[in-house]
Image 1 (cartoon, helix red, strand yellow):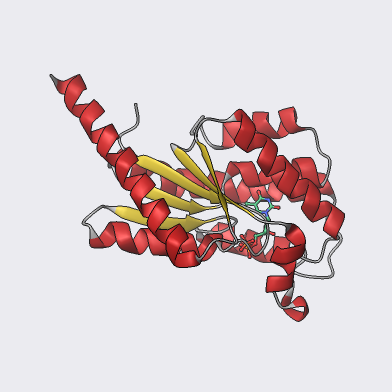
Image 2 (cartoon, protein in one colour):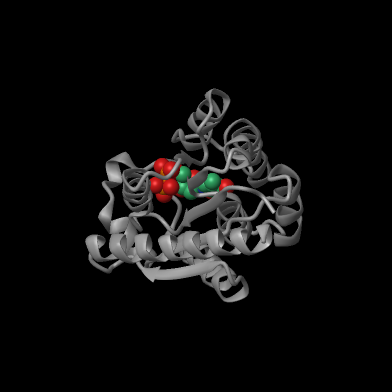
Length: 215
Ligand code: TYD
Protein backbone atom coordinates (compact mmCIF):
# COMPACT_ATOMS: atom_id res chain seq x y z
CA UNK A 1 0.00 0.00 0.00
CA UNK A 2 1.37 3.44 -0.87
CA UNK A 3 1.99 5.70 2.08
CA UNK A 4 0.33 8.90 0.90
CA UNK A 5 -3.18 9.81 -0.16
CA UNK A 6 -4.13 10.76 -3.71
CA UNK A 7 -7.15 12.97 -4.47
CA UNK A 8 -8.19 14.11 -7.93
CA UNK A 9 -10.74 16.69 -9.02
CA UNK A 10 -12.48 16.09 -12.31
CA UNK A 11 -15.32 17.69 -14.20
CA UNK A 12 -16.36 19.56 -17.30
CA UNK A 13 -15.45 23.18 -18.08
CA UNK A 14 -16.57 25.81 -15.58
CA UNK A 15 -17.31 23.34 -12.80
CA UNK A 16 -15.19 25.22 -10.25
CA UNK A 17 -12.71 22.36 -9.71
CA UNK A 18 -9.70 24.61 -9.53
CA UNK A 19 -11.22 26.75 -6.77
CA UNK A 20 -12.32 23.70 -4.79
CA UNK A 21 -8.94 22.01 -5.17
CA UNK A 22 -7.17 25.14 -3.88
CA UNK A 23 -9.54 25.51 -0.94
CA UNK A 24 -9.05 21.89 0.03
CA UNK A 25 -5.27 22.30 -0.14
CA UNK A 26 -5.46 25.37 2.13
CA UNK A 27 -7.74 23.70 4.67
CA UNK A 28 -5.65 20.54 4.88
CA UNK A 29 -2.43 22.55 5.23
CA UNK A 30 -4.05 24.63 8.01
CA UNK A 31 -4.80 21.37 9.81
CA UNK A 32 -1.14 20.41 9.63
CA UNK A 33 -1.24 17.91 6.77
CA UNK A 34 1.67 17.57 4.34
CA UNK A 35 -0.15 18.44 1.12
CA UNK A 36 0.65 19.48 -2.41
CA UNK A 37 -1.57 20.71 -5.24
CA UNK A 38 -0.67 19.89 -8.86
CA UNK A 39 -2.51 20.47 -12.10
CA UNK A 40 -2.80 18.76 -15.45
CA UNK A 41 -1.62 19.42 -17.99
CA UNK A 42 1.32 21.11 -16.30
CA UNK A 43 2.93 20.95 -12.91
CA UNK A 44 6.49 20.60 -14.24
CA UNK A 45 8.67 22.78 -16.49
CA UNK A 46 8.20 20.37 -19.41
CA UNK A 47 4.50 19.94 -18.63
CA UNK A 48 3.84 23.68 -18.63
CA UNK A 49 5.40 23.95 -22.10
CA UNK A 50 3.28 21.05 -23.34
CA UNK A 51 0.24 22.79 -21.81
CA UNK A 52 0.89 25.85 -23.96
CA UNK A 53 1.08 23.73 -27.10
CA UNK A 54 -2.18 21.98 -26.18
CA UNK A 55 -4.27 24.98 -25.22
CA UNK A 56 -3.11 27.57 -27.76
CA UNK A 57 -5.92 28.57 -30.11
CA UNK A 58 -5.93 28.20 -33.87
CA UNK A 59 -3.90 24.98 -34.04
CA UNK A 60 -5.00 21.81 -35.76
CA UNK A 61 -4.01 18.94 -33.47
CA UNK A 62 -5.23 15.47 -34.42
CA UNK A 63 -6.82 13.45 -31.56
CA UNK A 64 -3.94 10.99 -31.23
CA UNK A 65 -1.34 13.77 -30.97
CA UNK A 66 -3.56 15.47 -28.42
CA UNK A 67 -3.81 12.28 -26.34
CA UNK A 68 -0.07 11.65 -26.42
CA UNK A 69 0.79 15.23 -25.46
CA UNK A 70 -1.50 15.06 -22.42
CA UNK A 71 0.05 11.71 -21.56
CA UNK A 72 3.58 13.10 -21.97
CA UNK A 73 2.80 15.91 -19.52
CA UNK A 74 1.24 13.37 -17.14
CA UNK A 75 4.23 11.00 -17.27
CA UNK A 76 6.52 13.84 -16.24
CA UNK A 77 4.18 15.08 -13.48
CA UNK A 78 3.68 11.58 -12.09
CA UNK A 79 7.35 10.76 -11.97
CA UNK A 80 8.66 14.15 -10.90
CA UNK A 81 5.96 15.27 -8.42
CA UNK A 82 3.26 12.80 -7.58
CA UNK A 83 4.98 9.49 -6.83
CA UNK A 84 7.87 10.95 -4.78
CA UNK A 85 5.45 13.02 -2.66
CA UNK A 86 3.14 10.06 -2.04
CA UNK A 87 6.17 7.95 -1.13
CA UNK A 88 6.95 10.47 1.59
CA UNK A 89 3.44 10.00 2.96
CA UNK A 90 2.04 13.27 1.60
CA UNK A 91 -1.41 14.12 0.24
CA UNK A 92 -1.50 14.99 -3.44
CA UNK A 93 -4.47 16.94 -4.81
CA UNK A 94 -4.51 16.94 -8.58
CA UNK A 95 -6.65 19.32 -10.59
CA UNK A 96 -7.49 16.75 -13.31
CA UNK A 97 -5.61 13.50 -13.90
CA UNK A 98 -5.82 10.38 -16.07
CA UNK A 99 -9.63 10.29 -16.25
CA UNK A 100 -9.59 13.63 -18.07
CA UNK A 101 -7.99 11.77 -20.99
CA UNK A 102 -10.74 9.14 -20.89
CA UNK A 103 -13.44 11.83 -20.79
CA UNK A 104 -11.98 14.31 -23.32
CA UNK A 105 -9.91 12.21 -25.74
CA UNK A 106 -12.08 9.09 -25.32
CA UNK A 107 -15.69 10.18 -25.01
CA UNK A 108 -15.09 13.66 -26.48
CA UNK A 109 -12.78 12.87 -29.43
CA UNK A 110 -13.86 9.26 -29.92
CA UNK A 111 -10.53 7.49 -29.35
CA UNK A 112 -10.97 3.94 -27.95
CA UNK A 113 -11.35 3.98 -24.19
CA UNK A 114 -9.52 0.70 -23.56
CA UNK A 115 -6.44 1.95 -25.42
CA UNK A 116 -6.44 5.20 -23.45
CA UNK A 117 -6.74 3.26 -20.22
CA UNK A 118 -3.85 1.07 -21.24
CA UNK A 119 -1.63 4.13 -21.83
CA UNK A 120 -2.90 5.65 -18.58
CA UNK A 121 -1.79 2.58 -16.65
CA UNK A 122 1.70 2.79 -18.08
CA UNK A 123 1.99 6.56 -17.62
CA UNK A 124 0.64 6.51 -14.05
CA UNK A 125 2.70 3.44 -13.06
CA UNK A 126 -0.60 1.84 -12.05
CA UNK A 127 -1.44 4.66 -9.61
CA UNK A 128 -5.17 5.25 -9.09
CA UNK A 129 -6.76 7.97 -6.95
CA UNK A 130 -8.03 7.15 -3.45
CA UNK A 131 -10.79 9.66 -4.07
CA UNK A 132 -12.03 11.41 -7.21
CA UNK A 133 -14.32 14.37 -6.65
CA UNK A 134 -16.43 14.80 -9.77
CA UNK A 135 -18.02 18.24 -9.96
CA UNK A 136 -20.83 17.59 -12.35
CA UNK A 137 -22.35 20.35 -14.44
CA UNK A 138 -24.43 20.80 -17.57
CA UNK A 139 -21.82 22.01 -20.09
CA UNK A 140 -24.19 24.70 -21.34
CA UNK A 141 -24.12 26.25 -17.86
CA UNK A 142 -20.37 25.67 -17.47
CA UNK A 143 -19.44 27.35 -20.73
CA UNK A 144 -21.74 30.28 -19.92
CA UNK A 145 -19.66 30.85 -16.78
CA UNK A 146 -16.54 31.53 -18.89
CA UNK A 147 -15.56 34.46 -21.08
CA UNK A 148 -15.84 33.33 -24.73
CA UNK A 149 -13.09 35.76 -25.84
CA UNK A 150 -10.66 33.93 -23.57
CA UNK A 151 -11.67 30.37 -24.45
CA UNK A 152 -8.74 28.01 -25.11
CA UNK A 153 -8.61 25.39 -27.87
CA UNK A 154 -10.59 22.80 -25.90
CA UNK A 155 -13.19 25.19 -24.53
CA UNK A 156 -13.88 26.34 -28.09
CA UNK A 157 -15.17 22.87 -29.02
CA UNK A 158 -18.91 22.60 -29.70
CA UNK A 159 -21.56 21.80 -27.13
CA UNK A 160 -21.93 18.20 -28.34
CA UNK A 161 -18.27 17.56 -27.60
CA UNK A 162 -18.69 18.91 -24.06
CA UNK A 163 -21.87 16.87 -23.57
CA UNK A 164 -20.01 13.69 -24.50
CA UNK A 165 -17.26 14.63 -22.02
CA UNK A 166 -19.82 15.05 -19.26
CA UNK A 167 -21.48 11.74 -20.08
CA UNK A 168 -18.09 10.05 -19.99
CA UNK A 169 -17.52 11.33 -16.48
CA UNK A 170 -20.98 10.23 -15.37
CA UNK A 171 -20.34 6.78 -16.77
CA UNK A 172 -17.05 6.50 -14.89
CA UNK A 173 -18.76 7.67 -11.70
CA UNK A 174 -21.21 4.77 -12.01
CA UNK A 175 -18.37 2.30 -12.57
CA UNK A 176 -15.85 3.31 -9.92
CA UNK A 177 -16.28 3.18 -6.16
CA UNK A 178 -13.71 5.89 -5.50
CA UNK A 179 -15.81 8.46 -7.40
CA UNK A 180 -17.83 10.98 -5.44
CA UNK A 181 -20.13 13.10 -7.59
CA UNK A 182 -21.34 16.49 -6.45
CA UNK A 183 -23.51 19.04 -8.23
CA UNK A 184 -21.24 21.92 -9.24
CA UNK A 185 -24.24 24.28 -9.01
CA UNK A 186 -24.23 23.90 -5.21
CA UNK A 187 -23.07 26.93 -3.18
CA UNK A 188 -19.20 26.87 -3.32
CA UNK A 189 -18.80 27.25 0.44
CA UNK A 190 -21.14 24.36 1.13
CA UNK A 191 -19.24 22.27 -1.41
CA UNK A 192 -15.98 23.22 0.25
CA UNK A 193 -17.24 22.05 3.66
CA UNK A 194 -18.63 18.80 2.31
CA UNK A 195 -15.41 17.96 0.49
CA UNK A 196 -13.23 18.73 3.51
CA UNK A 197 -15.40 16.58 5.80
CA UNK A 198 -15.31 13.66 3.38
CA UNK A 199 -11.52 13.86 3.00
CA UNK A 200 -10.96 14.10 6.75
CA UNK A 201 -13.15 11.04 7.30
CA UNK A 202 -11.20 9.07 4.70
CA UNK A 203 -7.86 10.16 6.15
CA UNK A 204 -9.03 9.17 9.61
CA UNK A 205 -10.14 5.71 8.50
CA UNK A 206 -6.86 5.28 6.60
CA UNK A 207 -4.97 6.16 9.80
CA UNK A 208 -7.06 3.62 11.78
CA UNK A 209 -6.33 0.93 9.19
CA UNK A 210 -2.62 1.73 9.47
CA UNK A 211 -2.79 1.28 13.25
CA UNK A 212 -4.56 -2.06 12.81
CA UNK A 213 -1.82 -3.26 10.48
CA UNK A 214 0.89 -2.32 12.95
CA UNK A 215 -0.71 -4.28 15.79
P1 TYD B 1 -7.50 24.17 -17.91
O1 TYD B 1 -7.31 25.61 -18.23
O2 TYD B 1 -6.68 23.59 -16.83
O3 TYD B 1 -9.04 23.94 -17.75
P2 TYD B 1 -9.90 23.45 -16.56
O4 TYD B 1 -9.95 24.60 -15.62
O5 TYD B 1 -11.20 23.11 -17.21
O6 TYD B 1 -9.19 22.24 -15.99
O7 TYD B 1 -7.27 23.36 -19.26
C1 TYD B 1 -7.20 22.03 -19.32
C2 TYD B 1 -7.96 21.59 -20.55
O8 TYD B 1 -7.39 20.39 -21.05
C3 TYD B 1 -9.41 21.31 -20.27
O9 TYD B 1 -10.20 21.77 -21.35
C4 TYD B 1 -9.48 19.79 -20.26
C5 TYD B 1 -8.38 19.39 -21.19
N1 TYD B 1 -7.76 18.07 -20.89
C6 TYD B 1 -7.88 17.04 -21.80
O10 TYD B 1 -8.53 17.20 -22.85
N2 TYD B 1 -7.29 15.84 -21.54
C7 TYD B 1 -6.53 15.62 -20.42
O11 TYD B 1 -5.97 14.52 -20.22
C8 TYD B 1 -6.39 16.71 -19.49
C9 TYD B 1 -5.58 16.54 -18.24
C10 TYD B 1 -7.03 17.92 -19.75
